[in-house]
Image (cartoon, rainbow, N blue to C red; front, top):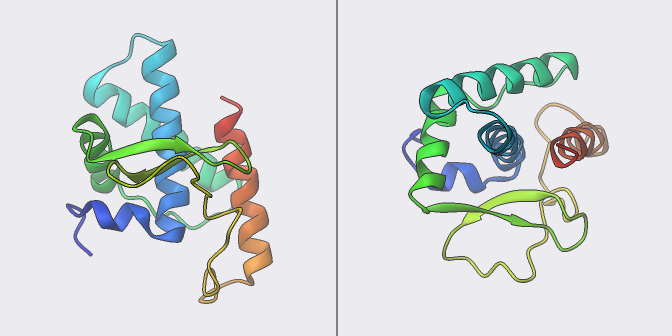
Length: 135
């Protein structure tokens, strides 16, 4: 899928990584004076550090991260809390958000089947989301 499609960000694994990145970006722009492309660069560096420390596969490229920020700023995508874990996750802005359950609380049946067992992927992703939510 092209990096210019907002649908890419709503798939299970891309949504976890994109949600992590956008939470980092939101924290940086909310609590520091860093803005615009500098905020995207610093957020992406922190995302890469998190991925490396937790031995995860890098899913989000810099181009997609930059497009993600643009989609959120233009309100094509928005962040909404999960009703089960209270983590903040990306959704389409026009989706019904009142009862949103994230991909970690309701893992799709085929999630993670390609490389690692689902349970291992879920555990690693849960740690990532908890750290992103703790910011």
